[in-house]
Length: 335
Image 1 (cartoon, rainbow, N blue to C red):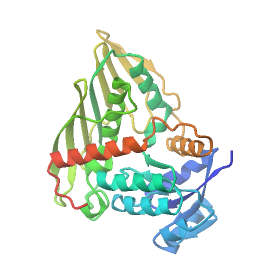
Image 2 (image 1 turned 60 degrees about the vertical axis):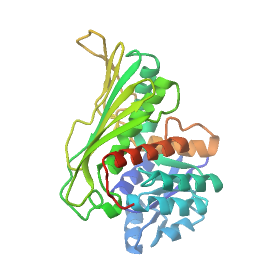
Image 3 (image 1 turned 45 degrees about the horizontal axis):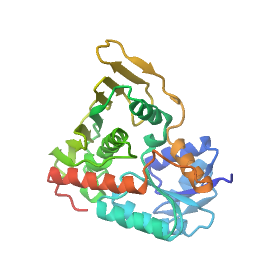
């Protein structure tokens, strides 16, 4: 299988993190960097020894040596550059959230379909073997029938009102930046209980604290799924919390201490047990991001399924759920 040739749109922190991944990939190689300035692109290209540096995103999309792009711009620019990437015939891995609202997600998905390109929303944990492990345990009934889910992704950032996390013009705030993770996980788990790839909540109730810039600095939500499965999800960019996933069933409970960075084992307590059964992480030291890069490349060249990575249908459901959470907390943020 030939290697998939990648370019990055945006040369910030998350782009650098993904760039390090290509050293571990057998399916892909990073060949180009695109930045708002040629100086920035050249610095990134020099750091990672890339043959192509472009002083604009449009120039990178016009490069025939690039097969796929990783969109690492601020959230507010995801939709526009995903649309342009699709029009340029480039396969797309876009940082979460894919867009800021369901209406824009529909446009991006339609563009990917029309131009026959692969589009993947970059929830890196979805392609990791640890996720496959706890999914299989749920399927096998390790805790009986699933009844409840708890999931959180929250951290305390420095006070930088003009920065990406707290700036409403850049799509800042907890729900969009990291709330999308626990929502994604809850929808995945509830889908397993229903025998489907994912589930969408039938009811959403939300609560939030708003900071001086107007974004949600931390928030919580209750998601009710069919079968009366209730998920408690929480997020924050100005509040440090325990980022653990817990699953509760009719015959026990399961804990995944680090579900999004996939560094932990999985712990299962049968009903009445005081000590858990420990299921070892299949890949605790592997590069986290390489799994989604390789899954995407194999899908493009061999048709191998990317499941449980985010499908187009799952990304649309994800966007609708985030819209409902933001509506529930009455978030007055310009999109």
